[in-house]
Amino acid sequence: MVEKLHIGTGSNYDIIWDKKYPLLKKIGHLIEQIKITNPVIRKQDLQDVINPNFKHCLARMDDSITDVGELIEFFTFSDATIYHNRKMHASIHQNFKISKAKESEFMSYLEAVYDALTIIAKRQNG
Image 1 (cartoon, helix red, strand yellow):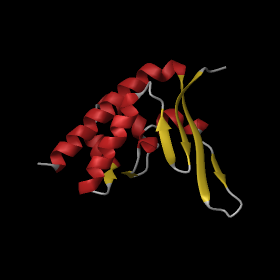
Image 2: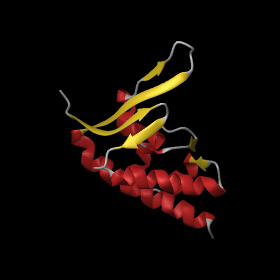
Image 3: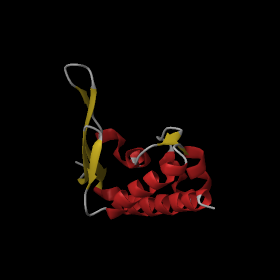
């Protein structure tokens, strides 16, 4: 059995990241800062500036980035579950987990994402 590490919990589209992973929250704030000037962060823009060793981690992402959850799908996709209430309004309930064996890669990836988003933010601000 693969040992999993809990990194966050989501309910009704609000995600609380585990305090052991402060970069997740920092990345979230950086995304919000970028979206003030440009509401769309394109996947291609991130691919252009991220450390090439981590480009494969962006494969599951949509063409635009709206939140941290999308950035980490490479590590969390198999554990995500979506439920619908009786009125068929979408309500997301997720426990974000990663494989313990991939924790080191995950942390390095988060650092690369943070660095890449920082470059994008600096370009926007001139």
